[in-house]
Image (tube, rainbow, N blue to C red; front, side, top):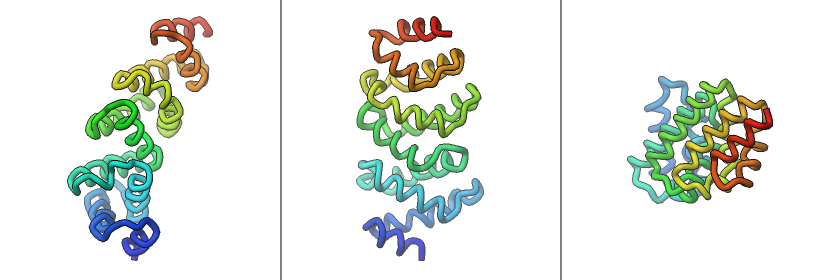
Length: 178
């Protein structure tokens, strides 16, 4: 039984493990399998420290967001990392983080870059974004657009941005490289 194995391997309670079945039942129409639900719950439990302290309604909402994003290109592990960093370092709420993740996917599509790549770049820019707080995600999207426009890797743009006092001066410098 998947839920028993999940409990055994993670130390999760029965109530927590039952969330896997509920997640699959609720999201099967979107292609979320039992294995996907287990991966989602496991990633959230092991990476997003607040997840296990939340009530069932909040856990279900977050797990549904992460499971659907997993189906459309952002791995559950990466989403869990973003939930952790956004709520801890950026001071964002769980709802703000969920919306930002969905928005991040839309940005990747608009820029024509792989969704997982942009999500991984977001995780990689965590230290810089933490300095910006809640404005970090918008700055990140602007930097991603600059990276696409200049042909530079986003990591180079973000490391360049860290050397400047404002986003505007970093963006100007990045445009000058084109």
